[in-house]
Image 1 (cartoon, rainbow, N blue to C red):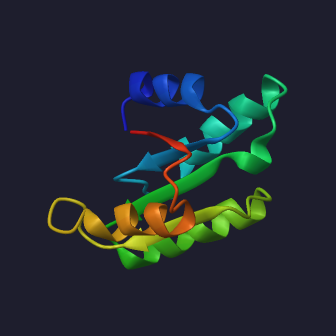
Image 2 (image 1 turned 180 degrees about the horizontal axis):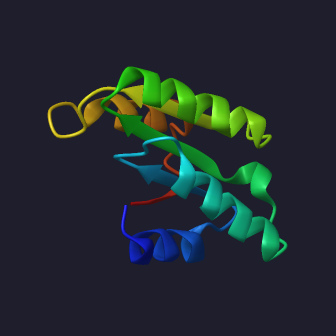
Length: 105
């Protein structure tokens, strides 16, 4: 993912928001966004992290990476984002049925 996109995502991670990476790979952008929120002194417990990755083993590595970094509120789906974006979008609705969280793309 381009560094500019990651940088924009880092600036967006505010408490109460959800961050979604449609091509999350090993979860680096999600972790970077969380680290930036922590650096700014934000309450990272209320930030939801979501991603989708085509390659199943890479999605598993992303999950492991998030756990290693102490993240508990996340969902990484395996699947083709272009063909089935609904997987993660449905998860964000299940996790936040009232729509109270702002989702950052």
